[in-house]
Image 1 (cartoon, rainbow, N blue to C red):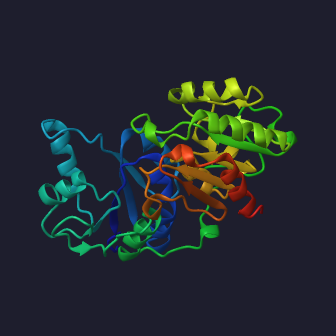
Image 2 (cartoon, rainbow, N blue to C red):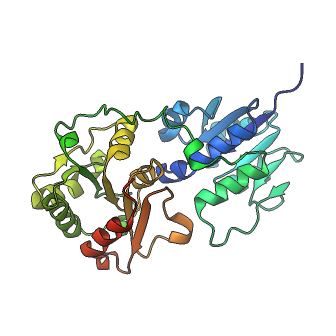
Image 3 (cartoon, one colour):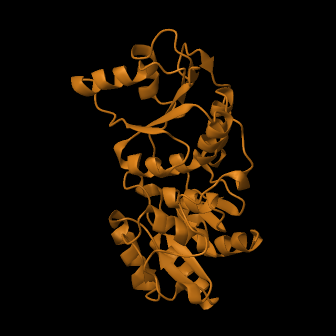
Length: 315
């Protein structure tokens, strides 16, 4: 019996980065249908990754400090476990360290670290989505058309499993007012979200607000100025969030994971960016998405968002 190829993919996160990798993951599976493909990711994304149809195994990496001897030995053993190919889609200082100190000398490593067997090309000015597609293409992936990537494992387009009675009765917009707590400068000001919510509501739309419990303060500010909003903060798991975003007529948010998810699932969506985001590298990808940027971020106007939404395809 022939040897089944074993491929290890490294992608730690965060959510937006994982979403930008969907097409790369699917392409790697399409090109290597019989391979055993494992994903190394961080513990917060392990259950999400386990839902994906593209991996046979999910391995967690808590990214422990070097003095954690137990985890250091564990990661060394994982990287030396007879992989035919190691595809580094994280390309961080940590994964360069893994290549230098943990990987066997003769391993096929696809990445950007010094001395790898299969170095990526110059990715200057290239979007993360395309970077990952290029990486898996070098490792044997077969790129799929966007509509060939199956998302039935994540969301059902004909029903919604989250508690938001009334939203399906008329068109609705989903607003994402929060973002990473570590980068509050990426937030569009709450008064802009309030004005946007009220404008969309006046145009006949219901408004849903989503986020995690850490986004509670941002949501409360929005609800204070737009009390008609449906508050779903902390009430959706990843599947419920995906279904809500996929069915939304409009999605507007900051540079944050759920906005990337909305864009890739085909929602008419706008990401509002400040100077901390490089759109060449980090703009969302999808058939009906766009972005607006200003320095400072508050200079992105509500009128500009509404005008950009009007320019996006409605179907």
